[in-house]
Image (cartoon, rainbow, N blue to C red):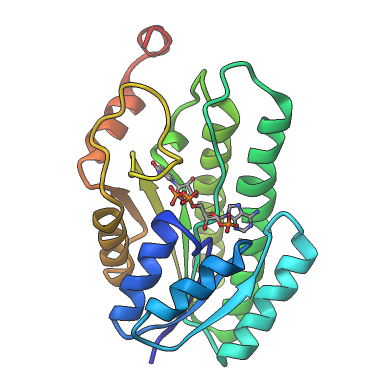
Length: 238
Ligand SMILES: NC(=O)c1ccc[n+]([C@@H]2O[C@H](COP(=O)([O-])OP(=O)(O)OC[C@H]3O[C@@H](n4cnc5c(N)ncnc54)[C@H](OP(=O)(O)O)[C@@H]3O)[C@@H](O)[C@H]2O)c1
């Protein structure tokens, strides 16, 4: 049986992805801070699962907890780094900006670090990072969030190049969701908001197909393309 860890499995996309992985025969390791939600989720899963309380911002403890979880599970084939934080922050409240960086940059790096080193030792593995369409360009309403997601995508590319240069069969998948129907999708004028099960199903398919990149849902590729090509003088008026 294949085994996967999801960091950030207690709600939203991570929770739904855990269910899909379990339905598809995976033994799943569920990690997040809200352990009570992980306990509830475990009861809903058709296959065996493991639980670990992890706060990715406590980097040393979090790394140790992932290692403990891997040991409890025996081995792991897939690690999904889904934990994320973000909100619309037009007034640039610094505490919120730093909290975003703590989870999405520092926490992500700690999880990617432990995952890559583990798979390097194993000689094989698959890391999935949940970035965002926000990674493509900065945004006035959420500068730290967009920048943190750009960091995630860029970091994943670095790991992909490292695996390639070292001849390691470690797959690195960068998932870029548009809007998904969770409390994290904030603001006015939201469109193409994907139901969580649909988003998770498409993420699962991208993982199974060993994709390096995937937009969720797929049509967000069009918006990504537009965001990439429009000049600043147009973008700044949006
Ligand atoms: N919803 C969207 O429109 C959208 C769009 C693009 C990208 N994304 C990304 O998708 C991912 C999942 O978000 P979601 O929409 O499903 O929102 P969500 O329901 O709020 O899920 C966030 C998950 O991250 C975990 N998490 C947050 N801080 C953590 C910490 N310090 N340590 C460990 N786990 C932590 C949460 O668990 P605990 O609180 O229990 O720790 C929860 O399981 C995020 O990375 C988000 O940036 C979402």
